[in-house]
Length: 531
Image (cartoon, rainbow, N blue to C red; front, side, top):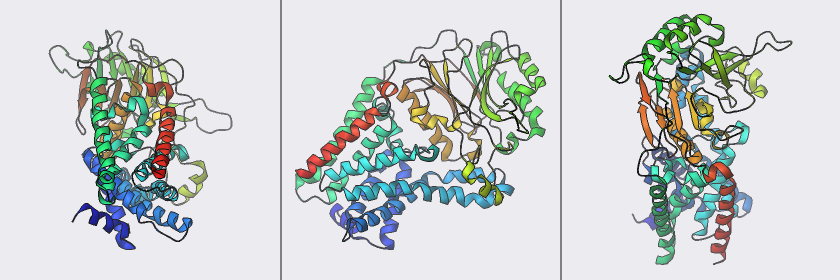
C-alpha cells in the first residue's frame, strides 16, 4: 500500500475505524518517549494527526470542529494512556486503600488530558490551510495546547510532545534557546512533515515539507554539536558529593515503626567504602539523601540528629529530604507539615530549609474544591500526613556551606520549565530530591529523569538528583551525565559538582522566544495558504 492509499484510508475513515486509527496513532507516540526513546516514531502520531484533521468534514464550521475534536480526543487518549500507564503502580502501594481507585489514575486522567489535543485539533480545523501550511497549523495548535496543559489547574506538563525528541542529546540542546514548548513546536512540525507525501499531487509539493524537516533535524544536530564542548565540564573546587540511594520499598517508607531501621540503613550505606580513595563518608564534603527520607519529623527527633552528627566528619554537611513542622497557627489543632529539603551541619543542627512550593494534587494534598467529595467516597491523598502537606510560599536559593547557591526542587517541581529558577541571583546548580518509589520498575522514573535533564539544558545549570529508588545522577549544564545509579539499585555515587555554564537565552527570556516562534509559524502558514 502506497502512502497515498494510506492517507486516503485515514482521511476517509469514519465511525469506529476512525476512532481506532486515532487511538493507535496516539499510542504509538509513547514509544518515542523514555525509556525506549524511539524518536523516529514521532512521524506516526503527527502525520496521522494531519490526515485525521483533513478528514474532519462537515457542512458547518461547528460540525468540522466537532469532528476534528473527536479525533483529537481519541488520539490524545491513546497517547496519554500509553505514556502514563505506570501511574497505576502508586495505587498498589497501599492496595487495601487505593487499588479500587486505580482506574481513576490509569484511565480517567488520560481521558481528562485528552481534552487538550481535542481542543487543538478542533481549533486547527477552523483555520486549516491546504498543502504545507497545515503542517505549521498543527504544530501551532498542539504546542499551544501543551502550554495550556502545563499551566491550567496547577499544570501537568508531563510527556509534552517535545520530549519525543529530547532524548537525543544533540537535538535537545535547542531547548537552551527555545525551551520545552519551542522544542514541541519544532518537533510536531518535523513529525507531521511526511503527511504531504500521501496527499500532495505535484512532486515538489509532496517532498518540500519532508526535505525541510530533514534539514531541520540536521540543523538541530549541528547546533547541538556546536554548543556542547568536547571536554568535560570544569568542577567546583573542593567539593566532593556523595549521593545515597537506599532503594527503600515504598510500603515501608512512611511506617513510623521502621524509623530506626531506616535510619540505620541510611547511616550504614552512607559510610560505605567505594574505592581505596573513598573509604566512606570521611572523604566527602556533602552527603545527600532523597526526598521525604524519614517516617518521622527530623527536626523534632533529636536522637536522629545526634546519630547523624556522629556520622558526619568535621565540615561535612548532610542535605536531606524530610517532613518539616511549621508554627502552630491560631485556631488550628495541629501545625502545618511541609515537604522540605533540610541542611544539617556536622553538629546535628538544621541550618537551612526549603519547603516545597508546587505540591502534587491528590498525591500530597486534595484540591479544596474537591476535598469534601473525595473524602466522602473514602479516598485521601497518598502521603501519610493528616490533611496532606502544606505548600511553601517562595522558591529562594538554598544556602549550603561550601556549595554555590542551589535551586531546590522536590520531586515533580523539576518538570515545570518556568518554575525551576529561584527568585534572586542565578543559582549555581539545581538540587532535585525525589522519591519515585511509588512507581516501581516502570517507565515513570525514566521519564522523570529525562525531564530533569532537559531543565539542566534549558537553564545551563548542573543537576544533582537524588532519588530513593533511582535514577540518581549528576549532569552538567549540557545534560551530560557525569555519574548515575540505575533504577532499583541500592548504592552510593561519589562525584564532583560541575560549574554552572553561561546563562542561556531561555533562562533570560523564558517562553518569550516560543511566543515569537508562534507568530513566525502563523505568518508563514498564512503565507503558504495564500500561495
